[in-house]
Length: 96
Image 1 (spheres, rainbow, N blue to C red):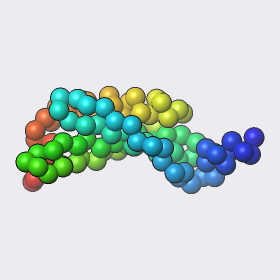
Image 2: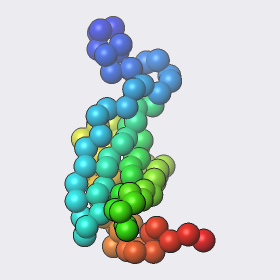
Image 3: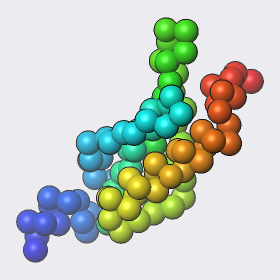
Image 4: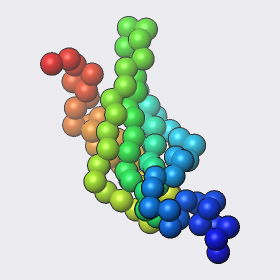
């Protein structure tokens, strides 16, 4: 059992190394899921990116939601990312 605790960072109480990011496209934006493990649960965290006028712009977001599996955290990160894009659209990268 200690092998799996070391492998997945369980029982350490501190944040473990984040898994390799996964991404999807939505409405011309890239949503990158970047959940991280903390105390045996995965925190919803991601990035929305788009190239505008030759420059890559990014909007980082994190939510209080935590999940017991990485797959659930990634799925909900994509859901939240799509929701942010649908609600904000081009205003997402406006300054001010």
